[in-house]
Image (tube, rainbow, N blue to C red; front, side):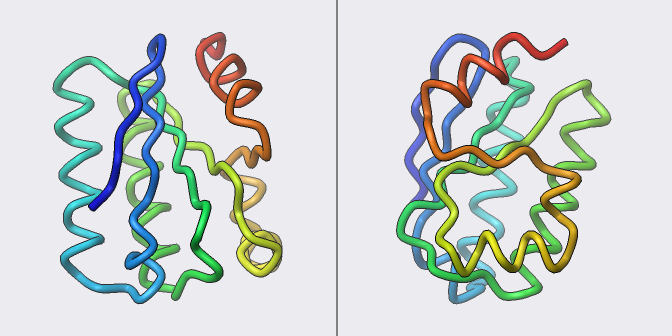
Length: 116
């Protein structure tokens, strides 16, 4: 289960480590969670990937789909605390050019909250 911390206009989503296994339930719950949070008025999402060592292509593809969906509403998705392996995958796939990546939650929340 994903955990949400709401702060300012940013929703910090602590991603369920089971997402790394690419289970459809976890992917669907993440998409639904983002949809529900958007309905509450949130447009900025910080995906805390702590505890996720890697992510299969299905997961990465769904993050891109979420980013596009959120961007259509002038929002943004950023990544927090990716493992070294996940950071490397994000770099190889050039997803690091589409998503901001942070190692510090406070810094990320401040940056996302002030993004226009």
